[in-house]
Image 1 (cartoon, rainbow, N blue to C red):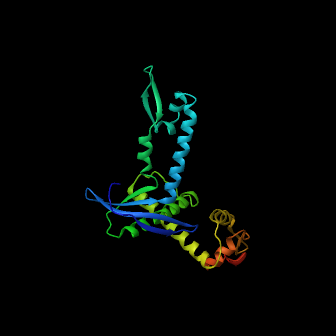
Image 2 (image 1 turned 135 degrees about the vertical axis):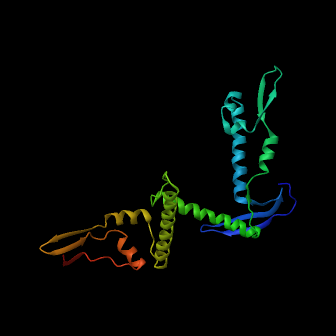
Image 3 (image 1 turned 45 degrees about the vertical axis):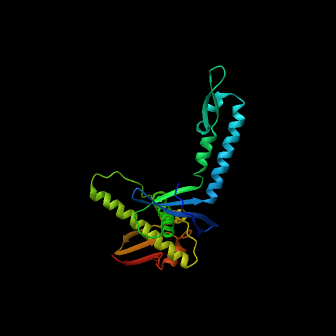
Length: 235
């Protein structure tokens, strides 16, 4: 924070709007840090703190007990001595000023040799990775399992990664065909798609249920042909 080098502006385009960052590289005790300031977050931090201060001023009129009972308030208070030697609380301007220094600030530590701008962009890509794993756990049901061996753990990781890979591939195929993919609906529709086989009089008859919802459209986008509704062959 005390480094005197100027911040460099970085404008990051997003799906909705854009993010204005100011960044700089700082070396401290042999470690490489990328200091980033997000102006939108800084404004939000200032507004949140101002709301707390205004609440403090209102609550202070009701007595000290109402202040101490609120954790959000306590961090901005300091104890003073009144004339009757009883403790009292007042807003700590020093704490407010110290916290204001960190408005909108986040810091990345990296041992890579890529330039600071690229380091920030790669860090933001991690949000996509987190979203993918969140979807894998919530939608594809690959939630953590307690395994009893290293082989089982590696197998679980492999299957989870394979799910993400197939999910991404199908999403890309659908996007190329202009198909909007809703995973929860698709999984429900696929669960309803069933096939059964019976044997009678030397023949094997296989039938499947009717296609519902997104299934037909998704199969077409993926270039996969659905089996016939009814198929008969010699047993």
